[in-house]
Length: 170
Length: 170
Image (cartoon, rainbow over all chains, first blue to last red; front, top):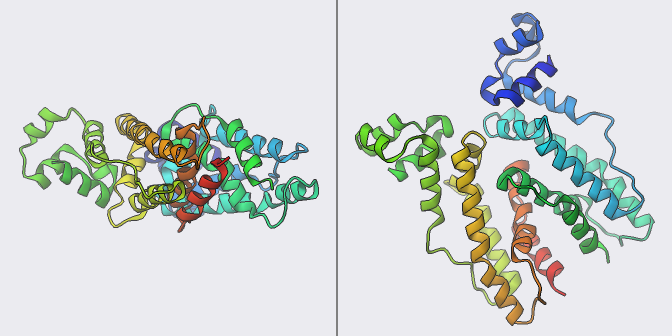
């Protein structure tokens, strides 16, 4: 069913995700869809949780700049790739508080997992503590979101990763 | 009529902005609304152009950090204030290409006008050329958009302004 929700969302946006459409697309009975999700917001939240993946770990390239670059390329791909599910969920978050809350949890989880990325950089001597890993990650990724999502232009994820790595060093 | 569009947008989002609703709210005949705007996207674009204001100039506080701080507080207010028209337009931009294009033009215009902010900082000796004024502005403001718009949490516009001012100096 979650695959059906993702497809509908990417194809037609929030308006196209209805319990009826999900039931039809996934060949599951409407009552079953209703039993599992009270509303569309819940459906979206579960899609995001599935997309986030419990097994995601930050990249480990051997340098802070390389790690941030890999994170930024993932963000860019999620926003502009062939199946921009993240963009569709962000668009939906303006209309569904459940989707907005799911996105917030998604980012909080990602930021927490990236603490190890910063710790490794400290161990390598690239960063000096204290470093706010969340702030560093927002500094590196926020411009990528801004360019891809709001300016809707090809951005420069690599440049922003390089800047953040440089600015937070020493 | 533009005031009516803004009100409807902030109150009920994109779905509530219809030619009929605009005509009723502004006490203007439907045919007149239609004559001026072919579609809702055109309406939104004009609202944004009016909100942008031809007379906007970047703040001039006497320091780069102060100027960026003032810009960030403006951004924060536009996204979280009592009448968050910018947030409503950004939400609409995911559903109306005309609104998306209007937003892009809006930001391009703001970035261009901020060139003088950077030039003044260079003249004061705070920055060394060459400085990409657009990149500096994105670095300072993108985290504010990210926190207010996507994380939907109280952000720290002042801190991001301070970081950008510090990182781009020398």
